[in-house]
Image 1 (cartoon, helix red, strand yellow):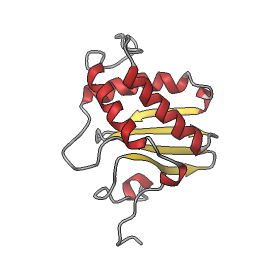
Image 2 (tube, helix red, strand yellow):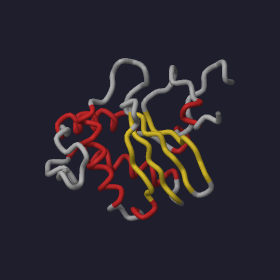
Image 3 (spheres, one colour):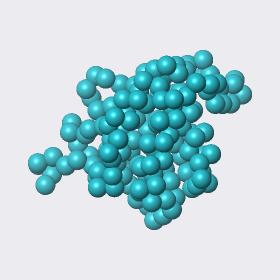
Length: 157
């Protein structure tokens, strides 16, 4: 079975940050990792869900929102995948920083949480989402295109 690149990386050495998971022609999948895998510290479902709702709306409402294909949580509760078409890595890094800053400063109704719009409208936590966003912003403050490659272990090199 062919592995998706994000499954082929060494999760034992993966750090928090923004990485390119895969490139398919004009579509790039970014791994937005808020937590280090398998370390016992994970996003709560309610914080993950709230971040998803706020950022999904934010990126779709952005200047190139039509180029955003998907913003979705990881089942491992360690982060999100952002899938974009025809956008530069530099633009995506700035968009991710702006989006998480938006969450960190957000005080309003969580977007799209009615029963008709959300399959689990009761499981949200804005204060937790804001704290997670603030922590992640510290990690990616100086992130550049040069930081987008997954870390390699000594064995892989």
